[in-house]
Image (cartoon, rainbow, N blue to C red; front, side):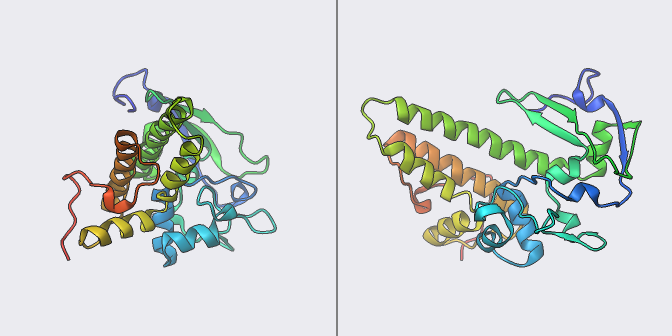
Length: 246
């Protein structure tokens, strides 16, 4: 995970500042990637399920990136700016920075090239750490890392299936489809809670934690029992996420 921000060599201590002027030019022709946590927050603000949100507001209905209009504008860009600003994705919160994380947890930041006519102001008045705090990035970074590390584990298991001489050739494809179907948070949690007779948690952070545990248990059961297509009812969450019985 990211290292202690108190150390001078920590990337977040780099001098950095940015003031947005609401020129809106950065909201065109951008690939705004999403993870299930961001989809869930946006879906709740729009008032739809994550399943509907993925279908109506993301590219190819895959839930991986926000759609764009015919002009190249973000689907949520209004006349006066972002209409989902309180729940905007991490990519938008970081701009004009980019964040990279290696599979061993090392974090780094890159400086993106702003639109040539951008009216935003760059400076060295603060630090990257301060900018992240101002943008409310912490829960989004935590969620992004959790899904990234899960993805790394899933890819590792997929590669193991592909190289296992005793595995059926279709096992890897079935396992991949099954795991990634559960990336629809509402689907995964609804299935799990229904089959375990408990009420789905309402708090987004609690839902996110439960979702990660469902995904991890899916991988664990697939690996230990050789089950490629695991139903959410077979997935048991850890006890640190509390949900109420019906």
